[in-house]
Length: 376
Image (cartoon, rainbow, N blue to C red; front, side, top):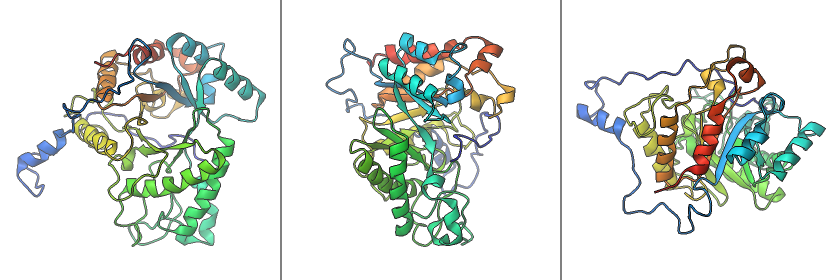
């Protein structure tokens, strides 16, 4: 199974705007309007549910982190459970742990006693569709844009036999990676391309992802009838599905990894690594919320992702570029769309991070900011 976020990215920076005079098939101003376009919540639509009362509980119901086991396991140097007890964190998604070890069982037991859910957010398609099957069944795997079946990533979501294998192997995920909140994550292979075969070519990346997810949830529900499964809107699946509809139990997880991490999302002209403006990201979020239930929609952010700021090189740790004003603006923006579930990566914020930079108070600010936020 691939390690989460094992790819390398160039240092994040604001990219230049395309030329206003570039031929876009219309008036030059059309390009600018599309770049800044966003779908704000309808002012006539109340995104605050009737049962929300700030006197009875926080707006953000899920307030969590995604990190490696080595980040949280050295508790004498950095105790995430203690941080959670003080600040209101209530969900840990931990990868690369030995789930059979006594120390893991002890750790998760203490999490349970303190109201902290445990889940597992990982890229899993290569596990669900083993690469060794390519030798005998290349048709299970994606066709590249040159018409050749390849086993580099993901698969062919139009192949019924491949989907049957994925559905069956999803049961293994459900049995081995038992979340305490009934949320499961079986993301597509990281940065992997989609299938371009004749049966798939009319499907956008999110459609193809959803075809896989609609059978994965079937397998999970055989193990856990209450299982829910994330549709990850990330990288090439940020735009909403066009053709395929989610079955019951699929929730949206919006993860804008390539956004500009130095400007808030409300700065609609800001542009990240992938060239999308924040206005385009918010338009994609709005489009996705027309397809997936708003009540269960979740954001996966990178405000505290030391691995990202360190360019995925743990030997060259960089301090998290925490910006309180940006964070507060972002959660206000997300809340305006009705989002009530938030996670962020804290990868590489570990004992080594503490030794180099001191205690990461940014974690406290993140957790307390979510806990104390009041939706107006």
